[in-house]
Amino acid sequence: VHCDIKPDNIMVDRDGTIKVMDLGLCLSTAAFRPAGQLDEVVGTPAYISPEQVFGDVELDCRADIYSLGATLYHLVTGRMLFPLMSNDDILRAHVDPEKRAPDPRRFASGISGRFARLLEGMLIKDRDGRYHTRDDVYAAAQTIDANGDLPPLPEGAISSIRLDF
Image (cartoon, rainbow, N blue to C red; front, side, top):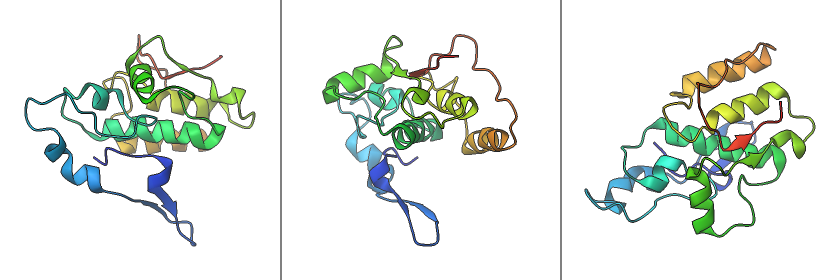
């Protein structure tokens, strides 16, 4: 688990190969939070997953899927999920079911409904409803390319974005 997926940590080299940089947090998360110590948040507030904010579960790839969703939202809209907020307010917004970013298509008209739905699935606040593996995300992305429909969100799932369907 990387624990700090964000635009600054993703590089594209000359041949188009995407590389994830800055593996410092993924290698040393345990050093930041000894057993029983839950008072320090590790990650970048604008892209952090809700479970990283809470710090009360063992992290898995679903945390990085959420952060990648937040990164993609920023990439395609030019806006962070929760702009113009203090870091503390951003952390609260990631975990508060009432706080949701606008539909990304409001800021970028070229975004398809299927891509918006993919982002919605990556940004589900409860990690149990989110895509579980990178293969799940890849399969969903392939479905978009094939002009197929993505499966609906799990019953009651709350995403960090609110789509205007």
